[in-house]
Length: 121
Image (cartoon, rainbow, N blue to C red; front, side, top):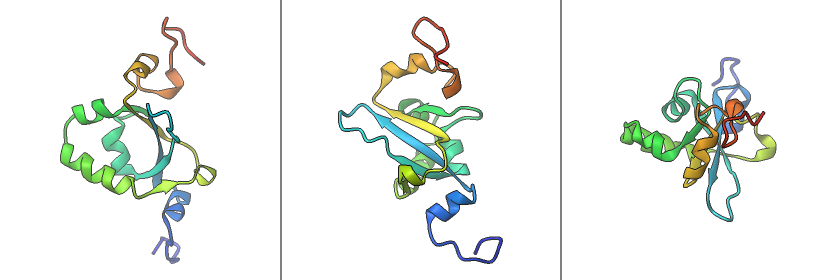
C-alpha cells in the first residue's frame, strides 16, 4: 500500500512517486537499444557514488561489494522502463566503452568534456 492507501500496481507507479531512479544502459554493441531500467535509491547509490550520474561497469565492480551489486543488478534488470514512460534519466551506465571515460572525467553528465578538456556544454 502507498502512503495514500492505494495499492501500487506496477514499477511505473513507484517511478511516478519518485521512489525509483532511471538508469540508461549504453554498451558497445552495434544493436545497442539504450534501454532504461528503474533502480531503488539504494541500488542507484551502489552504482553511482555521491553526486555522480555516469558510471562504467568495470569501475562499479572495482569499488567492491560484488555480492550486493549482483543482487542489485538482478533486481534492476527486471524493471525495464519504456522510454516514452520514463520520467527522466538519472544515470547512465556504460558497458565495454572504455574510450568514453575521457569525456566524463568527473563522472557527471553536465561536466562532459571534449578530448582537449573543453566542456561539451
